[in-house]
Length: 441
Ligand SMILES: *Cc1c(COP(=O)(O)O)cnc(C)c1O
Image 1: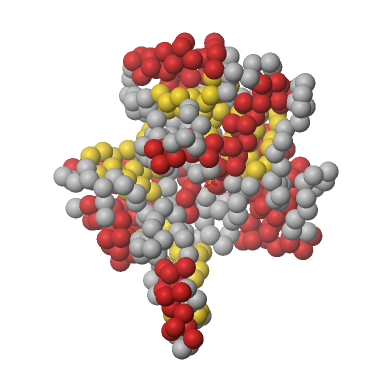
Image 2: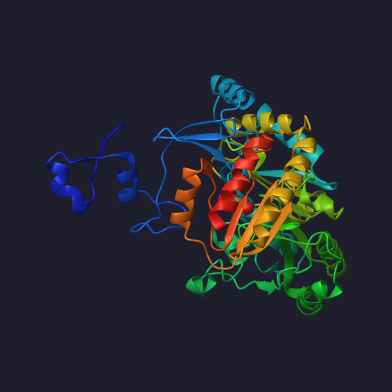
């Protein structure tokens, strides 16, 4: 195992004495990890390999992956087709600026995306992460109205329990409690929040569900640029699965009141919910669509913001006539090439058998958890399985249990959830659900 010198001030003495620590120890002392303290972090596991649906730890333990590395690695790890695409593109060229330059991988990607997404979306902005694609979507919506001579239409509406990323505009439309808005009061844009949709997927839609949002549209439409939401499945803001009729009504309200609809399918896109895009459950198309995560099959960061011709024309009409956004790595050829390989795998359509099979198995096997006293709710849609507990789980403790059971599951708060790679076998999936059951028993 490689050894590193510790160079922080506390360790300076021992450093000069030639003190060395292993990776985990170095990491703990110097490296930030997502959503944990830098000074007293949750434990970290060192991965040395990943293949198919399995992660190999430095301790030689092999874990079945239940997380798809946060919705991304849908085809499994170390995939020969994705590897080959990356190798080929590296041999050609890894990156060129996108200002004044285009290339085959970007053209191919945008063609393929436009053939896959819901009808009406015609223009693609390639962004470098999900959060940035949300920034781009919000910026487009605001500029659209400003260029129509209606600059007062600048606020964004969003249901509670949403999650749209960690950058500032994205954060301003995340759930205000989960997103810790009070910490950033005065810095975050004040957006408008509607109650989260309550009718569950599969239940009879309750008309009451849409009333608060109708009220907001009626009162505030003249200052509203867009409604942003995650279609059908709210991800990191609560793992909630709601009735597609809510989404349909959102589309109608946006049409009636001249408000743009932004659908954030960064988590739900590319088959995860049993449809290629979750919008399809409601049969609607947004004005602006954000994609990310699984787009490269979990190989590297890439996202896309797509919009209608009307939005593109609106944004670029009059002054300034351009959209002022251009990440350095915009349209990164390496990421585009891998995305093309990932989309070609998706378009082989094995997901159409894989997702319903995973859904059925999750429903039967997670149902048992519903009887446990520590469990408040179990819900499943497509290749997403959620067990909500009564009290928040002890992440470090439950994770230790999971690793001992040979699975990788990373809960947060009261949510123990899995969204495994689509290529997981029935036997591997059973190991995941069994580990959840024994952890909560
Ligand atoms: C993960 C996620 C984002 C943010 O994407 P990053 O690539 O992490 O910036 C935005 N919206 C949704 C719905 C997500 O799940």
